[in-house]
Length: 221
Image (tube, rainbow, N blue to C red; front, side, top):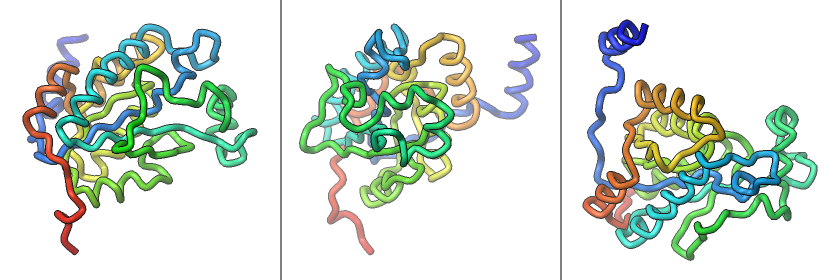
């Protein structure tokens, strides 16, 4: 069955490698305490912890290379009035109510003055946010994705990234999920259709070699 599936995907040309651009940015998706606190209902275990540790390796390299570092956070009004059907569907999203400790960014990641922070209420980093406009303004052509969870907000953001015309790279050991099966299945599917998979080491090398700080003055109207 596996051989037949591989042959089917090969015939379709899935898993083709993209041509990377020269204006990358790195997106750090939802690295909130909620996924790393064993007492929180969204606790993601070792899969998410590994992603966090690798993302923390990437962030300083990107900053040093002048590559935009963009963080997403999920934040709701207490009680979820701005969370809509998503908040109603997943009661554990109350972990992201404003003021809760589980809503905050998890160490060892931290914000610096040069980082961009995007607040969202739904799975994709693009839906209902300024992310697409910000990337367009910065003339970004390639977006590296890190974050949690692979099967949720990472996948949703991946699909929207390529839909916005961005070469999309998923850093496979810097994204994580609470179980290996959905993690691997979603990596496979994103690789087939939407993104290239790279490692943290590959991401660091790419950022060091191609990093350039996009300047507002580079943009012409």
